[in-house]
Length: 114
Length: 113
Image 1 (cartoon, rainbow over the protein chains, first blue to last red):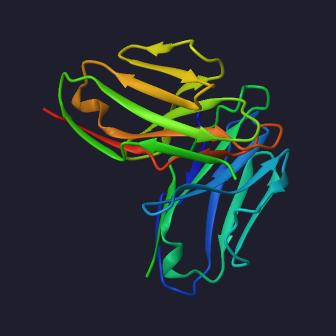
Image 2 (cartoon, rainbow over the protein chains, first blue to last red):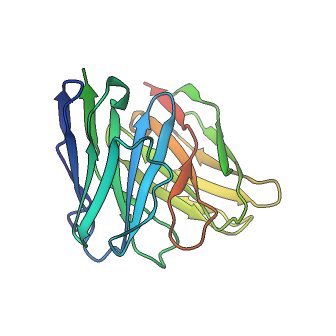
């Protein structure tokens, strides 16, 4: 099992640029989550999908953030325009309904906005 | 609002010591509590607890849940330098289904040789 795959692993970008983070969930998992982790706030849920449909995006900080899941094997998190305060590690995770909320994380995308 | 509080925030011990990490929670509709270990990369799953008083064990790690007092502990015996990590406690959000997790800030554990 390849696990949750994220790309890029690291990105450094200038303020104002568009950032797109990508995620491939574990095959067969029907839930996909985007989390953000910072020292100050820890791990925070941004948005999650069930069967490719966004269920709860209340954690998305601003309109600059958007997420899509066009099919069961791919999701993107986009920040446009990016700001320095968006610098964080963004984790994608997936789970299979009925497994009692065991969520499996990708390796994370380390974003630095300068 | 769901809340998860971990203590201590950081802990430094010597190899061979036993440590106890704490997690208290407030959630409207409790279903389970999960422990994760995070080293330099992604959090990796350790335990899921659903019932009070039943210890989950994996090698030198064990965990137990008290649903009456709303807390869980994670014990690590005979610690090794490889146990150094951030240990995260999490509870599923109060909604139904496989919702997102609310995480505590974590306990940063450092094991000195």
